[in-house]
Length: 270
Ligand code: ADP
Image (tube, rainbow, N blue to C red; front, side, top):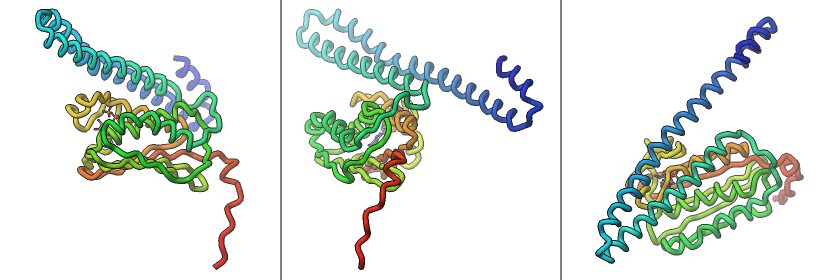
């Protein structure tokens, strides 16, 4: 009701103020709805792995005479608990990102280092999957932001590109620089995403193919985390895809003002 009192007080100043306050309330309602949905989603998503852990523990108890069975159930218990740990970690990360709209303390970050750190984190998975990672593009490009968060964002895109690829194939990671923006593109030759699902892939817990995503340990949170990190950096993330042929995800980030005012390289005379 603090807002209510405020709106009554500023009303004589003109309709623009009223409009701003109304917007504020809509935003507060939206955030509250986001929070409520998030909690409902989490409860729903956690039920499956928690239920599985319970059932496996029970099965383990009954299989105690059979070492083969014991090993099988113990392995599956480990997989389900690792999935729970990953999901919990991502839920914490996403709720932290959703709670703030801007970066607390942005620093100058070298995009090439971000890309190579993200590639390094995916090297083992790529090798295991028979996928070649190929990087290229603009060098010595800087953005303002949080290096660890940007590494997470690029890492998530590369991890997905590997996960949804068919082997043997390549995943390309390219950096393009224009006067105003830096674009990091991750391209795969994988399963692709059907047109009618493209809009939804950035929603939290959304998976095109529930069974495939669950089987590969996907949480449905990776792209939602990418979207929030990129938005907190004042950028955007987009996707192009063709089912059966592959996908390209691009992160676009604004370049710091100092850099875009640098003199352009001299053009050759023709
Ligand atoms: P997940 O943990 O399931 O991978 P994400 O939020 O990272 O969750 O992705 C959401 C869904 O988008 C995935 O389940 C998958 O169906 C689809 N997706 C994401 N990246 C790709 C890609 N590179 N190729 C094909 N499908 C993808």
